[in-house]
Amino acid sequence: MPVFRSVRPALGLAAVLLAACAGNGGSTAARASTNSSASTNANANANAGDRSYAPAITEADLRTRLFIFADDSMEGRAAGSPGHERALRYIVRELERLGVAPRGDSGFLQRVPIARYGPASSDTIWSHNVVAVIEGNDPVLREEFVALGAHSDHVGIARRVVDHDSLRAFNQATWEATGRDPNSRGPTPAQRAAVRVNVDSLRSARPARADSIYNGADDDGSGSMALLEIAEAFATARVKPKRSILLVWHTGEEIGLNGSEWFMDHPTVPRERIVAQVNLDMIGRGLAADVAGGGPDHLTVLGPRRLSSEFDAWVREVNATQSQPFALDYAFDADGHPQQFYCRSDHYHYARYGIPIAFFFTSVHEDYHQVTDEPQYIAYPKYTRVTRYLHDLAAFVADQPKAPVVDQPRPDPTGRCRQ
Image (cartoon, rainbow, N blue to C red; front, side):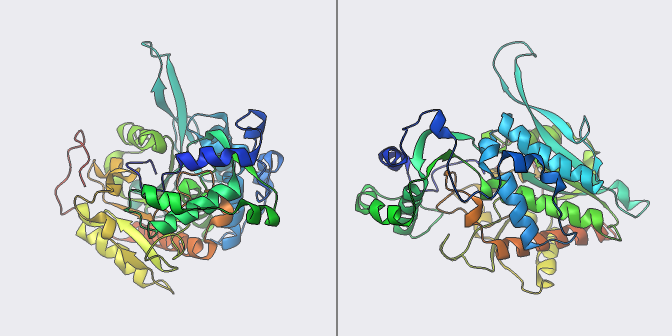
């Protein structure tokens, strides 16, 4: 999720102060993080398609996938970078293995312009959406689509190398000082001055770990790999839903929702036949240690009521059928909320065309947009439950006799987002 305003501790100074702990202060050689917690390497990632996964959505599969996708070898997945393209190849290989149908403009890929550096059309930097479809089993309803989306990109490599453990300890302390409040503007100068990190204590546990890679495990590795697990569950199911399932891994979310905007302006399926969209962005955290009011059952929802009260009712109805229902929190969906989360992720570009959306996330935390957003900090049991719920929601919508009724005013597709 891109930064709208500061909802994380203001850590720029801390990064500078802690850089010395990492050694090789900012050298190119030191940019290859020595994080010992990563379970894979570039060679393992190259052969990831050979791994065995269960057809059902499992915690083990989600963990394995996320350690691959958010590995240091993906170099922070900045849109259009070699590391990002490497991560997309993993998704494509898995979709090919599952026999899912491609629906990009070149196989699974849809080319997306993400930057211009000159006046000519050739002066364009390109990235890619990944687009796939699992065809429904109803001869009429299969021509309609229930869309699920996540963003595959993150923010790349930091300019300065830091000591991972020292930075995370500082992040946690300043996050606690703000009350773990995602609405906070960050710690006050006095709070920051009061935070001290005992580096000697950290070094007694393990040597300094140089780190400069924004792995983006939660943002949005969690959504991307949940989407891949959902794809596998649908692809291997004996009976497919009535409507088709549209799967889109959007690029460029972190730099301005580029991929979702491009996809909805240049859709590879008929736009008017997309009946709903479910957005998965940062769904791997949200325990009490991460955010005030969090816990294993806490799940934030935005948007379904804004276009379709019926779709909102379905979100609640499917949740109620879960063996352990979530406590759905709509606080961030309030009109005019200062965080403007409704306008900050890919679902918006579906909603601006009048498509009912539901955006799920587990809130920001101390590792948001930090090099410390890594797979070992994900709450995997909760993450698995969220993934299963969103699969069930998509299946429920896909099997309804009629699409959710749009009974609220449609926005102007060319207008500016307003929460």
